[in-house]
Image 1 (tube, rainbow, N blue to C red):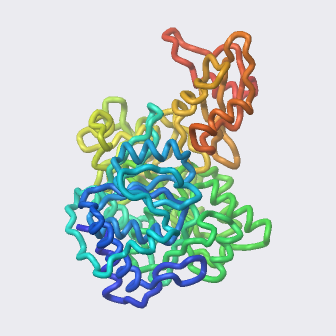
Image 2 (cartoon, rainbow, N blue to C red; image 1 turned 90 degrees about the vertical axis):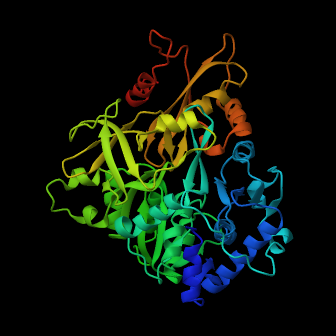
Image 3 (cartoon, rainbow, N blue to C red; image 1 turned 90 degrees about the horizontal axis):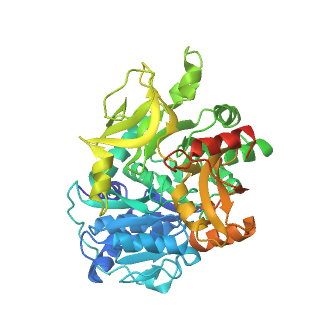
Amino acid sequence: MNLANSLARIARQDPRRPAVFAGDRLHLDYGALAGRVARLAAGLRERGLDPGDRVALFMHNHTAYLELLYACWWAGLAVVPMNAKLHLREAQWIADHAGARWAFVTADVGTGLQVPGACIDVDGSDYAALPAPVPLPMASCAPTDLAWLFYTSGTTGKPKGVMLTHRNLLAMAMAYFTDVDAIEPEDAIVYGPPMSHGAGLYALPHMVAGARHVVPASGGFDPEEIFGLARRIGRLTMFAAPTVVKRLVDHAEANGLSGEGFKTIVYGGAPMYVQDLHRALRVMGPRFVQIYGQGESPMVITALSRRHLLDSAHPRHAERVASVGVAQTPVEVRVADADGVSLPAGEVGEVLVRGDTVMAGYWRDPKATEAAIRDGWLFTGDMGSLDEDGFLTLRDRSKDMIISGGSNIYPREVEEVLLTAPGVAEVSVVGAPDPEWGEIVVAFVVPQPGQAPDSAALDAVCLQQIARFKRPKRYVFCDALPKNNYGKVLKTELRERLKNGTA
């Protein structure tokens, strides 16, 4: 089982079928893409990479992203995609922890990344020279072989490497067809949000279907550019966080546009406000599907279908729209107490999931794996309840993770950085609701006696050590943090202060 076989299959059937677009310009058809991937795979192996080696991708969205994903799998290698918004220091930690031997970068984000082997700019001459003259026969991979090492922040503040196998990702791709959307060869997926995350994962089902893959000329998300591509290319599908959906809808409404040119917009990564969803449906039409997943079960836990969103005659339609849908086909989902005992419908507990999309475990972290996967069930850390029809509603998170703009931010990581700032005695970081970002990061700071650190100085410390999107949007200076008898900070009380305006 090798994920690259889906590419080879389409290339054999229909080599002239359009495959990759740079903006609205055809870059490669499927025959050319498969040939280039096979020769890139040969170049990687000829230069000393062996099956099972890890290759880091630290890039903005680029046509080379698709080439490299499939070239690595073709050669039997594993990819380590990294968010292009990360600070170089954070990306370096991931590359080191993953034991990445090679790295591919774009110069705007990857300058300075150090790996034992080559670090190649995909816009440079070394990348142009990498494909070998003779293509490599596709490597034979076991279903359990590592394909994608996905780094997601952990509660300790250090990222954990989620091991996703060829079987995990093929099951994810198949679930798209049964639970999210049918895909035709004339369809096109557009990569506005980062390909290191959900957008890149959804390349797989679209490759299986032989659809078109569109990389915006900007290498990222710009509403005007995306709407322009929808007009010129048509039948666009995009995966987006709710904040990105809101920006699309804002642009459409401000410019008198509809959803013409879009086929499907899959949203996930954070809950969407119900009023925002109704507005999106009103402005852009019935083009939306919600998915709920985690890095540990990528894109596959539940789905709220187009049909369920539009079934306004159902007596529980309002509750269903506020849910994250029903279990996707390859998995079982239940809600359990702290001991893993299933709870009745309506009761709140931890969301558990079991199936072929659940990760093989955490890279080099057997203790964390043992804590997360028990008797085959992934304990997600999310709190929710199931109704009698199987619809899951998320209630809260058992962890303190903040989801801002679809990106996961763990308070401990930000707190550790702020505690290195001069004049800071104590700090506690929480999330506060925000209509644009979903949540924003708020830091409660206790100054050292006689000191008065200001927001600008604290911002500067954060920007030296962590990604810009993780830094607090607001600082609250206080004399003390509320604590229980054991000295633990009461973050619930801090959130309440923000809620009632007493912070």
